[in-house]
Image (cartoon, rainbow, N blue to C red; front, side, top):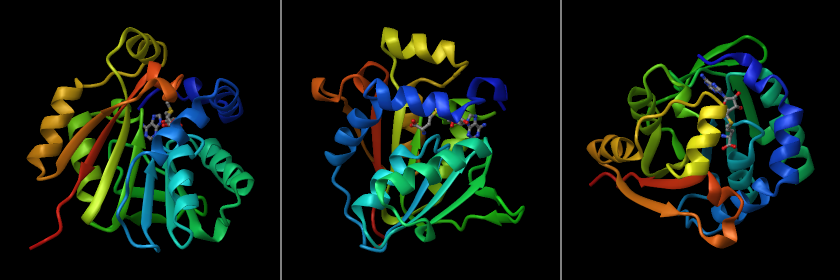
Length: 219
Ligand SMILES: C[S@@+](CC[C@H](N)C(=O)[O-])C[C@H]1O[C@@H](n2cnc3c(N)ncnc32)[C@H](O)[C@@H]1O
């Protein structure tokens, strides 16, 4: 578990994500990812931060429901505030604290401990967070276990460019190589596509790359 000091203020994080154009460029990138899931899709955003990934999909699928988790409760409040701004009804959102070391467990703001069922989410989003797990590969395996057949895990991971490494160091983000993540994903039986961000996805392109893992339907 990382020092909470790094993410003490969700307001500061939210301000920079918006004012530097990060949120817009990530949103633009997410629009380019085709998602084949039911209108009432179940979405998980683990380590949601200000909710930009999960809220994108909740916005896109009008009857979907979103579970958003983060280690820090202040980020859950920021996600709910951003949902309001984006017009996503809060009745479609459940939030809870969770350590990415075991993303299958969450504690609601009322203190109820919940276990997320295996293969219960059509879309599992995660971005720049599994490097905070005590065992990154195991965290990734647990996230993959939550994906329903025909569903998708989308990891907007810190990339291995100079800027990606610089920002990772600044935020004490200690990750396994992306090649190792690819191995974990394919070993779990998923089809993987690694998508680089284009120039139109600046500034997110400086630090992020996308791992799009699709789980085949059962025979
Ligand atoms: C770099 S932000 C990423 C936020 C968002 N996923 C995104 O793509 O922009 C990292 C987030 O991970 C959360 N975090 C840090 N350590 C965590 C942990 N051990 N378990 C769950 N979340 C954690 C932080 O509170 C913060 O909201």
